[in-house]
Image 1 (cartoon, rainbow, N blue to C red):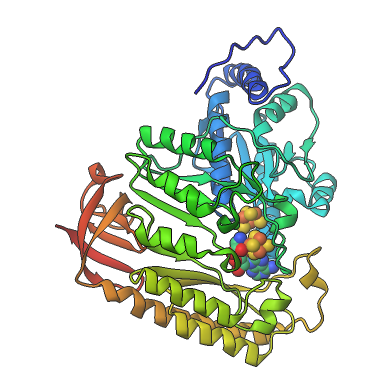
Image 2: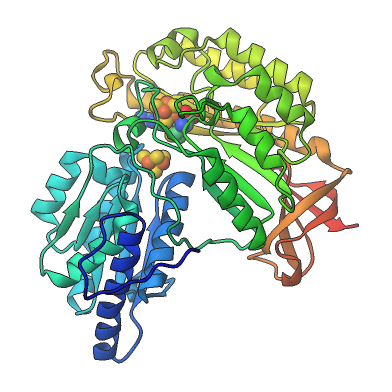
Length: 478
Ligand code: SAH
Ligand code: SF4
Ligand code: F3S
């Protein structure tokens, strides 16, 4: 990382990221002072809700917290600084946050050093912030998805005032590079290639809380991955709400397929994953690149959402059932051993039994390795929330159960086709339940457990897949 001269007797610089390094230094002094007072180091605990974007954002928060002098504490009840990085894609995620905040209120009463920070997608909704301001006065810092890079500045501000610090931006065109971040895994990392979403699927709140689509500069992405590789990373997951539209709005436009080819050239990098791919923008060029690549993993997450063309149109997905199935055929022909996964919503407004059967039909035709199935959740402010014919709960529940059963049966069959083969697995951890086993991830994203120890973590090893247990394998090193 580049170093800057920081002089706290001077006013804060205007330029980023220098400004944030200034505030990290400032916040560090406050934390030091408080921990001397307390006679122990101050600790933090970040809890992440939602998707991989949020997981990556949390790594940035942890990077800043450690820079400022906080020490990680895995147990939330014991931490001096609790941060919730929230998700609002479905209503139940919000309910969980309010529930947990209620518990934190009591813990805070007995710890004079305790602070509570809330950030992430939920904070981008004005009615949420109103509710927090009114009924959750004990929260210390509230910020949104567009300004997490300002975390150090917000911490310093909180230490200097006794008031709730709230900083939410409606949108941004800014991307701040080169801030610290602390990786959860030493050998793999998420890498943002773009932020926001322009698709406005009619059920989805993400475009409203993550703002308009912005692609990072390819040079910045490559530089970040090169640094990660130099630091021991062998697998990257390129992150975006719709990676297939990467680069379209850059000053010098570049396609996602071209970006992948550039990343492929990075020496020492072994595996490349990406998510999410919107079917409407998946190009032939990308399929060709996947076919010829040695590093791109044999896994594609291709959310279908519904199998009914009528519902897809109401969802504003901009593809038909037939187009989706054609695309799947093209991919399977080009990359025969690819594993396909998907997201499906059940009970979108106006979904009839016929529509639902179309979804079942797609599931049976594609034969996904796995599928995330969701019950439609009404998100205030999205077009679908005011659509007529919201489906009754008992009907949705019945469809959901039928779908889940089908998905699981197919998934077990599809998963078992690799039984008896030898494949490369990246060892991720020692098995939680049996310490004589380690857990590795195959290129197609399936897990395999096999005898081994901690020293294998981060290595790619050959494993024979002896027995399929439904969604994972038991194997041995060969
Ligand atoms: N950008 C990704 C998805 C991000 S949200 C894409 O376009 O595929 C992850 C998943 O949550 C979506 O694929 C969808 O299946 C689900 N989801 C989004 N909004 C939802 C809602 N209102 N109710 C239920 N599920 C929803
Ligand atoms: Fe939501 Fe659609 Fe954007 Fe995905 S592509 S984040 S589902 S609006
Ligand atoms: Fe949730 Fe925000 Fe991701 S709403 S799914 S955390 S982009």
